[in-house]
Amino acid sequence: MIGSAFAQDPVEQVSIGFVDLIDDPRYDPDYAYNMVAVRPLGRAVAGAELGILDAAPIGLIIGVEFSLQYRTGENVDELVAAVEAWVAGGVHFVLTDLQPEELLALSDRVAGLPVTLFNVSAHEDWLRGEQCRANVIHAIPSDQMLTDAIVQYLASKRWRNILVLQGPSEADQGMVDALRQSVSKFGARIVDVRPIRLTNDPRNREEGNVALVTAGANYDVVYIADSDGEFARYSPYQVNDPRPVVGAAGLTAQAWHWSWERSGAPQVNARFESLTGGRRMDGADWASWVAVRTITQGVLRSQSVEYDSVREFILGDRLNVDGAKAFPMSVRPWDNQMRQAIALATGNAVIALAPIIGFDHRTNDLDTLGIDQPQSTCGF
Image (cartoon, rainbow, N blue to C red; front, top):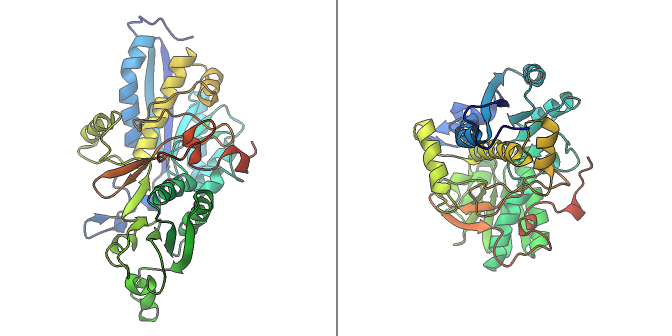
């Protein structure tokens, strides 16, 4: 059990791990072009560091010292070794900023250990579906949650006819697959899916011309499926008809946006910017912060630092995490995805927060975003 509510000195230790890969292509600085970043500018471990700082006052009250251990590795083998050593030393919760394949490999290799991983950056739906793992909790929203948020907003505006421009990557295909599910749920329609790519090859020049690609169709809105963000930023104001652009540019669905001004968000953003020397918090930063916050609440509310007790509380129906996004957060029991609101934002403003008013669920309106239990293919 944790110490007295009036403890003056920490009497228990709770250390949280964080792992990522040195050569993660998502952080490749070469993806910044002419000072325009199309990749995150900083590692998500900064969000976890903020979570530890925010946990300190709670720790002083309950007699627990929270700390963070960080390991970046050359490959998954090194991360497995780090997690094994941490578990032997009493670390039982580890945040992972990894691409889906690396996350899956790590989770499988530590499945026999008393450790729970928090996914803070991989959006892929299949990680919550046919390839779900009982030892992974998803703090970052899924592709389906993001597209559901956008389509809810479009349906509320009666912009139901959607022209899709799809990039060449597998992740772009995942975005389109998720969008197809969303339009079927909320009564919208994809009028066409057209390939587009940023290229200087004269043989494929037409595929990079947004005006040409968007010609000859009747649509209310253009959805850009571009996980890299490379051609998406050139798309607004370039479409053939005067229509709004959503998806990877224009109106975007995000786990977090620096311009959100309610629910304590300005204070979270200010603390993060102070910690990082002015860098704005992004989705992976926020997911790391909220993962630490979830573990902290698990210790506080379970009144224990024992792994089984804390994990049981986190996965139970009493969890109620304030993620500074208006709606209280908890973990879906069918796929370990954290329920959460989604910010619909332009470059400098949050236009709406999903779930949009009018989209109701029988038990929790947050479950209108993402795969609901009857449709889940996850089988722990």
